[in-house]
Amino acid sequence: MASIDTIIEDFELLDDWEDRYRYLIELGRELEPLPDAAHNETNKVRGCASQVWLETKVEPDVDGPPTLTFRGDSDAHIVRGLVHLVLTLYSGKSAPEILATDALDLFQKLGLTAHLTPQRSNGVRSMVDRIKSDARGAMRAA
Image (cartoon, rainbow, N blue to C red; front, side, top):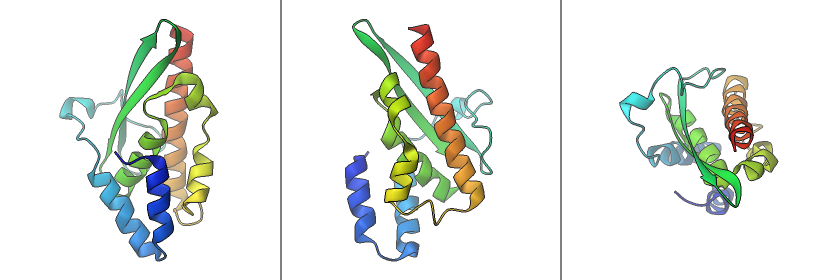
C-alpha cells in the first residue's frame, strides 16, 4: 500500500473531482482481497450504506501497547477506496496512536469532506469509530 503522504501528494496533483474519484476507485482495487470467510457479521461495520467489513488483528507487545492491523472490503468501488484510505491511516499503528489519529484531518486535507455524500461520510465515521473501539478494547485486554 502507498503511504498516506504519497496518497495526499497524488490527490494534490488531481484538479478534477472525477479524476479524484477514479483515483479512489484505483486505491480500492489495490486492497488485499478479504477471504470469503471474513465477510461475516462479526466483521461487518454497522452504519454504512454500502456493505463494509473490517478484520482486526491485535498483536500484543510485552514492552508497550498492542499494535493493530486491519484488512477490509466493501461491495462498492468508491467505498473500497475509502476503506483503503482509512486502513492506510490506521493499520500497523499502536492502540494509543490509533486513538490519537484524527481521520477527519486527512479527509479535510484531501477535500473529501466537501465531496462525499452524507451517507458515505457517515460510513467513514462508522469505520473510524469501529477501529478506535477495537483499539480501546485491545488496550483494556493488554
